[in-house]
Image (cartoon, rainbow, N blue to C red; front, top):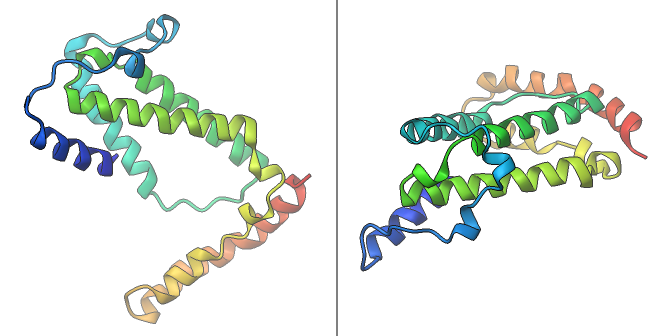
Length: 171
């Protein structure tokens, strides 16, 4: 979203009309069934700002998982919850830039929902369970080695559970 926000600001600054009034409805339109529980227009901007803050904060959380079936089912449920929360925001009441971000966020979440529900690569791709990048990034990252010990131990502590989940989940 931050990339899209920056790109939107750049495009808005370069446009002949500094305040575009319309976005193609086929891009931002949400089917009537999904709009049934939308928020009032007056609350749309505040609700969207809160959504974006939560959406970006979720990416920054450094949560370690055991990659169990329950973990992946929980991820799908969270994606659906986020998508419903986003779709409850009346995008037509948002500014042009926020509508672009709303559309971008919806496409990310919808793609994630499809991936988690239909592709389910955790069932057949062993690379899902081989998350050694965190080790390398922590070891090679800035800082003193002594300051990295707790982070490395946390990463190492979850590896056996991830491997067991891989054995149980891979078909």
